[in-house]
Length: 477
Ligand code: ADP
Image 1: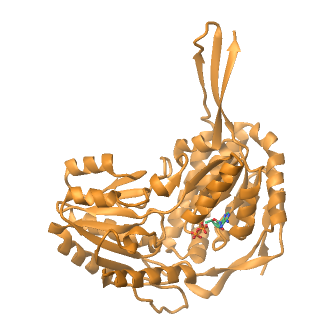
Image 2 (image 1 turned 90 degrees about the vertical axis):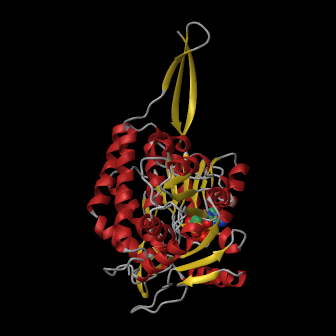
C-alpha cells in the first residue's frame, strides 16, 4: 500500500506510517499515513516561517484563486471525499457528504473574504494627522484538529489562515488523517507556494507538543479535549502567542410543556444521537418539564425504534459506529456509571453485532437523571443522553446553565416569551430555538463560553479576529 506522506517545505516526505482503520469494519484499512517526527515538525515550522514574508504580501487575487479552486475541487469530489470521511470516521455517508460540502463552502466563503479585506481611516484628534487601521496576518499559525469533523474543522481553520496571509503548520488527529491529506493535496495542486502550508500527521504528544513548544509558532488554533486545550493555553502563555480553543460541551436541550412534541423529539434525537453523539455541540442533557415529560420520553423511545445503527457506508444507516475501541469503552463506562448513580437506562446502551466487526452501540437514553450525576456533568462524547425532569421553565433554565461548559444550548417551546428569555439568558455561545443543539451555518460565528472555549470566534467574517492582528498608523499630512 502506498504511504500518504507529510508535506514539509513543499516536499512529500515520510516512510514511518500507521494504518487508518475503518470503525465500521476494523478489517478494512483505509490507507497508510506517515507519522512526523520532532525533527520533521521543526522543519515544517521553519518552512512556514521562511514562506511567511512572501505569502503575507501575496496578491489577494492569488489567494482568492487558490481558495476558490480548492472549493471547486472539494465540491466536485464531494461523493468520493464524503465516502472517505465516513470510512475513516464512521459517520453516515449522508453526514460525510454533507460535511464535505460544508468544507467546500467554507473555502468558497474565504475565497470571497480575500477580496473584502478592509481597514478604516479616521481623522486624528490632532489636526493635520490621519489615522489608518489595518489588519495584518499573525505569522505562522499552528492548526491542531480533532477526529470528529475530519474535513470541516481543518477547512474552517486552514481557509481563514491562508486567506488573511498566514502560513500554516497543520496537525490533524491521528485517527482520521485521510480527509486532511486530501485537502492539503488539493490546496497544493491549486497553486500554494512551497512552505505556505505544511502537513505534519502523527501523535499529539510528539508533533502537537513540538508545535506548542516552538517560539516560531505565532498562533495556535485548537479543537479537542479540555485537557489538551489547557496544555495549548499554558504553552501559549509561555511564548506570549495568540491561541484559540474549542473544547468540550455538555449542551442542554430544554423541552417545555408547550413544545410541539414532534419538533422536540426530532431535535432531541438529532442532538443526542446523530453523528453517533460525537459532536461538541451534541446534547447529552435533556431537561424536560413535568407536564410533557412522560409523553416526551415515550415518543423518543418510539422514535428510537426506527433508528438504524449499522455500517456508515450502508444505505439506510442513520447512526454509524463509535470511532474506536477506546471511545467505545468511555461510552460504555459512562453507561455503567449512570446506572450506578441511580439513573434509569430507559432505552439502548447495548453493544450491537453487525455483518462487519465495528464499534456499534445502541443509542442510550437515561431517565430519572439529576444534574449532579457524572453523566450530567462530564462530556461523554458518544450516543448517550440523560433526561432530567424539572418543575417549570425557571428550574429548566437554571439547570441548563448549571454546567462548567457553554457551547450550545437549545429549547423546544411555542412560547415567544420563553424563547426570547432563553435566548437572552442561556449561558452559551450558540442558542437554538426549536432546532437541534448541533448543526450550524458556515458563514456566522461558531464558539462558546465558560469551559468550552477560549479566544475569539471561528468561522464567518469573525474569523479575522484570530487570524489577523491590528495595526494603527498615524501620518502627518
Ligand atoms: P480527543 O480526546 O478528542 O482525541 P485530544 O485533545 O486528545 O482530543 O486531541 C485533539 C488534537 O490534539 C489531536 O490532533 C491530538 O493529536 C492533539 N494532541 C494531543 N495531545 C497533544 C499535545 N500534548 N500537544 C499538542 N497536541 C496534542
